[in-house]
Image 1 (tube, rainbow, N blue to C red):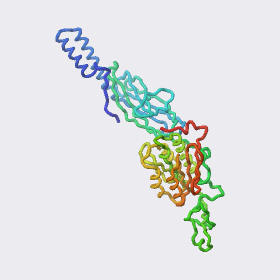
Image 2 (image 1 turned 60 degrees about the horizontal axis):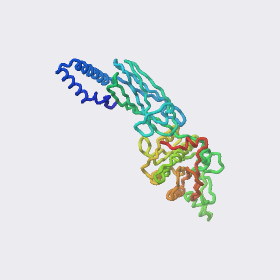
Image 3 (image 1 turned 135 degrees about the vertical axis):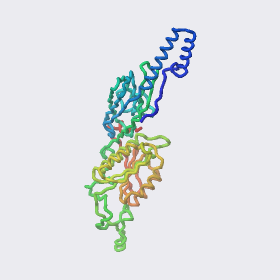
Length: 416
């Protein structure tokens, strides 16, 4: 699909008023009998007319195609991009230029002119095309940064052999490139292997099936009142709680707070990217262990502008769905995280392990965590940035995510 063509004369002389002036000179010279001037003006107008016609048909029958070998990659991988141009008409083209808009940071071997969008540049190629011939160019995109990128549109410009008229059109060739976040072993991020991520070989029974009661025991201050066995308590005159059969089934809901990375209008890009990598790493760890993971982010995704809502699941496509969503996460948001959490918590099954990934913890957030803990959810908080680990009420685990030292300069760098 193309937009309308635009014609660009090389100067005022080849515009409407310039041609009108030349025609007037020709007529006056013919009236006065100035043969030399008439011949010169006739040749000039003929050349201009041929040039205009040549330019008028220069982009007719031009076919352009872009081919991406891959459109989903991890940071550090390369993608080959192929641009093909074909002249499907008998009129040769002395010159034709193709400008493809690509992410500026993905091309390192050649300089790019500034594009129409921030962070994008124009990959330009110029050639000549005979009749019914084609040409191809290949480049490699070094995908260094997480994100959702749109390649294109492509601007094609050609004209006559004299360069009097340039004619341009825009080919709406849009391809989308998804660069997933980096994934690390959770231990490298400083995330403990136990509660609430789980460890099936641990002696402590962290995960329990509420439908299978295998006994009772004395009440502990960390126990939920929902687990109190009231009949046994009345019989023994001592507060007792139910003991459930342990299970390996685990549901983890990852909540990433976008607005917590904004402070006084300043966005913590490094912490934000580290939080996204932490979410991807935990999801990968949980799903590879055969458990269920979900993702909730109060963001405006790059393609839809909507927040991320992926309920916990463990099928084969769940991890790819989470990674793709994290690739599209932006620093923009419409709903505050507190309102977003309040609207989503009711949809989580009882006993779900909730992992909060954020930069700072407000007092209102602490109250929300306590409420979730009392409702029977397992809660963990993961913070980015420097500082000591905070101690939260009700023994809610809070850990500081650390950026892997080997990749501190590349991974903990802000996204677009």
